Image 1: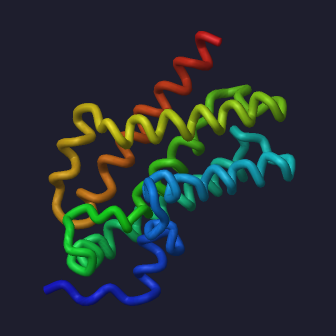
Image 2: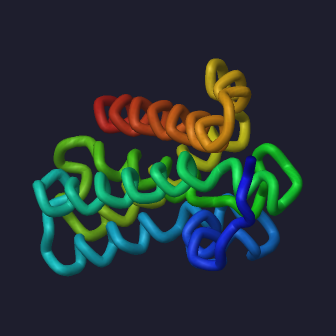
Length: 168
């Protein structure tokens, strides 16, 4: 039996309320990892370094865990199996992309800005269009169904970034 969504859990699965932003709540939910990544780069951390990657891995794990743990509660509270207010999945998926940036893609400020922008756009495109098997992953039960399609979108974005880095 699902329990009600506590205020703390609601705060986390909506990525601190960004899931209530309109339009395009998923876009809002994808922004925090980009902001954290940009801050880390400005502070001098290498985009492929241990601190940067660890921070992105922590964000991926934390927000993935929130989706899995509270997904059923959120679906019940918001009345949909994958409610638009739940954007912790987008936060996790975007952080996953940023944890695997191509080598050299943040070597200069301009290149870093372009890489972050391309990573963001690629993730959003794959998250919105959900090419196979991302769309099918939404049928997984509970919070897994909320999360897995976004992680797959992240994998597609990672591959796209690495292909773009090889070409450019």
